[in-house]
Image (tube, rainbow, N blue to C red):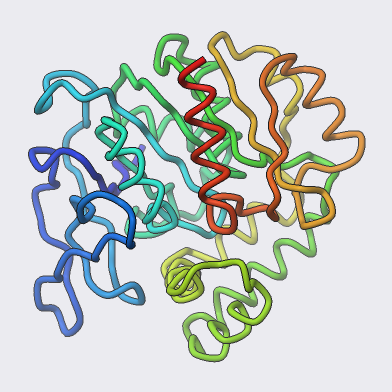
Length: 305
């Protein structure tokens, strides 16, 4: 079981034991926080196109940290990395959390893999890297499924769970998804500038710098291994995972017309299985990229309630 790379915000004492390299092998400088959010992330890295996760060689715990801040744990989606939370992390830190984001196996700066990309494997990796109690667990897409698997296998690991647009098992073509991942990951290495420009044109709601970070994520991930794992489909039962979750859950769904990965009968079954808080936000699948303010407002209202 590999120990995952992480990045963190809100607790300087939580910094990993080694500094990530910047361009040319020199130590990197912290990435500046976006306007309107408190402080730079507690993260050692370089410019968005080259920053890497700082490896952590011991479990990160939710207790015994500076100021006893409650722990928020962020789990990204497929072909992404902890880099995707560059605005969410500082925003949650500004709300009093110590925030840790992981790079899943085969993603970001975490170990590569030729196998073991099932939900149980990925959930075990997260649990072996970050010890509870986790006050707020947040998972996007694949990360939402990993988070559900984790709380189902380890009751008490987290106290509250936010799921961002989890996928439906029949909501997309697995083979086409795998082919797209393989192609995009290769292009991110061979021609990152062209891919960045295409992403900027296709996603006008993304903030400046988001496309560059997305290209960096694609270049960092093990595209071939991930595509091979997904090509035949990943077995999961989202309604069953939701029904088994024994903690408060907020599900933030993208708009179906804007590109949600949870559609049709899959969506209906998931909403019915949750039987609780579901919000549909005006964005596509990557809600936190396209509609951060509504995302934060929904989480704030839910936590307050």
